[in-house]
Image 1 (spheres, rainbow, N blue to C red):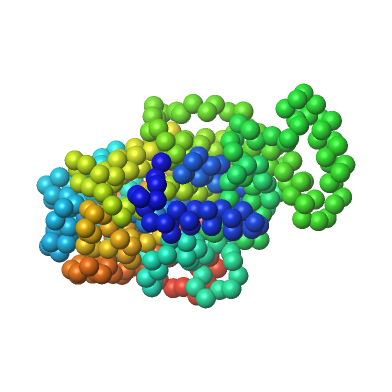
Image 2 (spheres, rainbow, N blue to C red):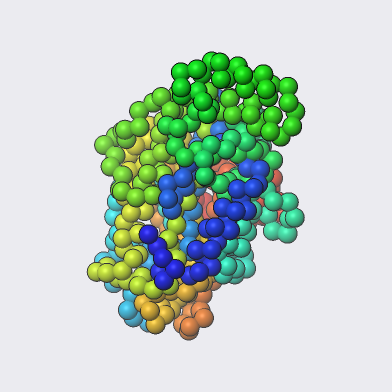
Length: 416
């Protein structure tokens, strides 16, 4: 488990702050399941199968994009990181400028089949080095707005389909800012425990009838939440009853992310209308000991990330034809390593796109060139909303101006 010595106090406190703040907010239609440092939440749009599914993996703590996708042709990279740089001849999927960290090897089949792409030098339009503030800003995706509604909440709100799966609180999970908004949320400690309290004792019918009598005509927030709870449990019942054994020969790595993505795959295989799933993976805040290929935290964290994502795609099988995954982090790290073989808070970063509709097997974005110096950042040349805009337009046919108010970005060509 990550300690305060491994990451900054602000990131550790941001976890508690987000749980405290978001736990009191109305969330989104869906489900929240928590596995330690990784959380998975789902937003159900209807009980019928969803034509497209979006999985958003948030790499909490500010992952170092310059290590995950190395700009080997930029000489400043090696000059600024004499102790932690990755040699060019060790990189995977290398082109004239970039290459993937060797620990991402499990994702190489996705890359080679054109189902995985990377967009470099992405991020918020202005640097924000506070974990908590940057998470809020990147998930609101509506600069200047005083209304706390996340971009995923706006996305699912555009669908003509309606779902009563709202306002469900079945565990310790919290709704991320991206899903916060007018559609209430539900959470659960486990899909297998997704039941109405008291129904497991053999008196389900009587218990349900009693609760319906109590809340059936109540028009308060609590009454609405109670009625939606009944429908949510019933809607997700096929998922709960289905097998929890991974399919397609998938083997997930042990730990939070593997558990969370296995759970996400199970929801997708249930095919009950879930359109949006978010997964949080923490502990990317590496101020010390980020390491190289021989030692350090990043190589192991990247390997877990890659093997979990690869297992997820194997697990969902043919459902992968409608599932798109977006991986992003709240900000990147500084160009230069610090005295502790780590990296301090920066600005620009990398985003990954995988699955349905992705024009993969290549790197996107405009490379700004790296600057040397203790305070040098990777300059953002692609607003992260440009990437998300292409996803919501192509996969959901959504009016992006309603998902990202006031934003107009260039076409990147990342999505078919």
